[in-house]
Image (cartoon, rainbow, N blue to C red; front, side):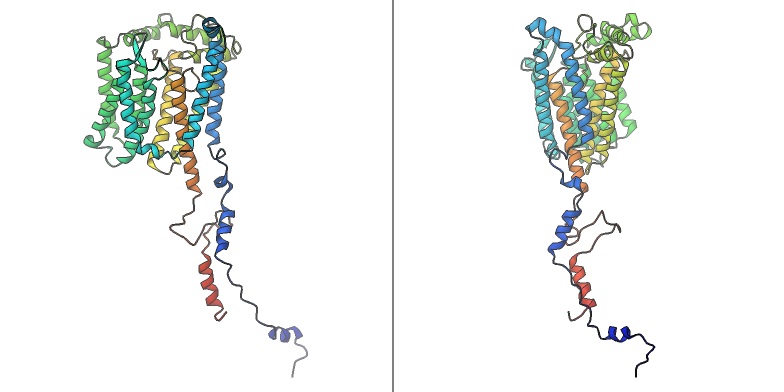
Length: 448
């Protein structure tokens, strides 16, 4: 007999049919979900996958380059060729070639160059020997081949970075060894740098020595051993120059020492560069309005282009150019830190240091901090070989950044073939496979 105080829905609930067991979805469902949860960065287009920050910095430097090269060459082009656009169009062509090479290298796996490092080094050494035998004589030096269109010294700076990155990344446990680390390093760099000094090209040789030494240190070399080698090389260089081995370098060093105490005793190029900065003031005389570039300033489109920037755009414009180089260095080391392998990290670090050293040498000379070296301003000075080689280095930096970004979003399918990770979920934990869910449902509802 039923108690009238008991609610009727209790009896009705007992007679309800059992709830159906919810089975797992087919195995194809996780693949669809996995695609949907991949971040948008992993599915970007081929051009959008490039490092935006680095492209903005390089684009800004190239834009300044186009403005300043036209400003420093239109009068020269008109007097020599009867057309003020001749040298500017040549620079635009070189820039276009460099950008094409940069984009090609950006989408080539940078690890390929690790396997080709030895071949590239042998070709470079052969080109350095060829320029000593068959090079074009210009102002008492042999630095170019094929009527000045190819400078093996510029290529040597680039290739030594690639080779050092490949060699150092393969000898990580032997870097501190004198037999397997220090001696091979000293012999290799000595051969390449020595061939460059025989041209003679002191600034390029100094760049090779400095960049290689910094890369060697970053790879884990003993600082004491490295300092000993640096002191030895520096001592030999000073003795050689003092003994008349490089007469032009000795003259530049003497003028630098004299100019340090009295600016009127500095070299002619430094005096004219300082005068350009004084004439420009804080805001500059205006784009294209430089006076020093017409007669007084030597090589205003190459070595002295930073002084023209200071005169036309002022201290603020020159400071903006320096800020762009600082931003490039910061971004370069960020890309190196995020690299997925030691070769990529050393490669990007080496290229970044190489660009920074070249920029520092040129700016230091124009401000009278260092004796004249003949170093050009990266990405801004006129010059085909230098511009193409530098943009090639940027292409490798973009390749490392692109592949490192893709590696970050790559799913670990080999270690967990039937599971995927949901990085955007609230619980921040891996989801198990549907196979596991099926077993779980079978244990919960046997017989279904």
